Image (tube, rainbow, N blue to C red; front, side, top):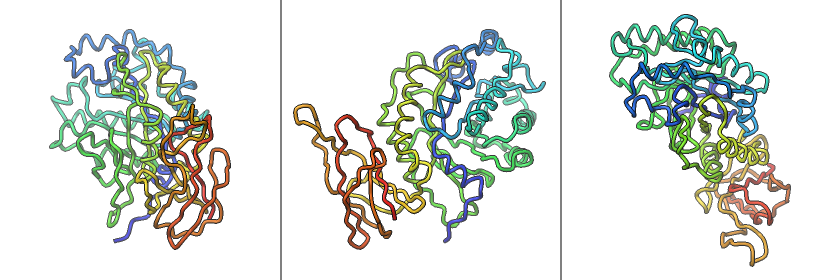
Length: 411
């Protein structure tokens, strides 16, 4: 069975490659994660008072967006409303539980979108479908769904063209009629080119839902290759991932991932053609935590070396001796992603022991004219026999170790 051709909006989404997720809301002031209202059984009357101290005084939209841009991200998905029910945007009379009615006194999504446009970043809107604040969610579900649809319509009409909408929460009522067709029809009416995502959650990685969905999600788990043969529509894939153990900021969460882990996860996503959506949790009033900024900045240094391969490479069927190694196909070239590469240097200071020398890939039908490391331009010796490509994977020069090194082969 044939694989369908991706719609232009989906093809463009796949080219974005890397995005920044951001979970920010009233919960950020408590520093105990975005689910603190539910997990810690807080009283909503008291919880609502957090809006009175939500000044957003540390939210500099330009600095926020540049954190993503400097990391090599092409898009940002920001929580316009999370499960707590508080909106960072002007709900235009639908509710007074929003940023303009808080101590901030302003539309934070307007600031976000304007900064994205200034810096060439595509804005995406996360929006909850689960709502702990709105009593109609339990009392009158149809009325709640109309409130949800009208909320999304505001996002689709008041902020210009957006990259897409990222929903989360349908898993909270698995047997309910969420009237997705009406919700998605509203989006298509106002934002026909928007990517629509509806998170299937931790328990259903990569599950395909409503026909209007443009991308499946892999929450906190590396994506597997999509089986698109026979699909009615080509659907993209995206992995969303936290920098530590929480989406919203956890003041006592020190369990940060290493740069190596982040880089290898990004590469694993692109190996199967999926995007990588890497989350930060802004501080109480909207600043970026120094540790999170540093990790994003380190990723950005890696992307400056190899970003061309991340954005422009597509899955390629080659296999390697080291199963972590893989090839992406670019425009007239191949990108060879090499893990566990040895480092060169004096034996008294270089703790190595990892293999450095000729590496082979099988199932490479293309003819290679020349090869080099992308980071320093060093030319690499190679040989081809049939569909086997072998090249001399010279080790890292003393003074560098990029976790995953990429070679470019011209065809």
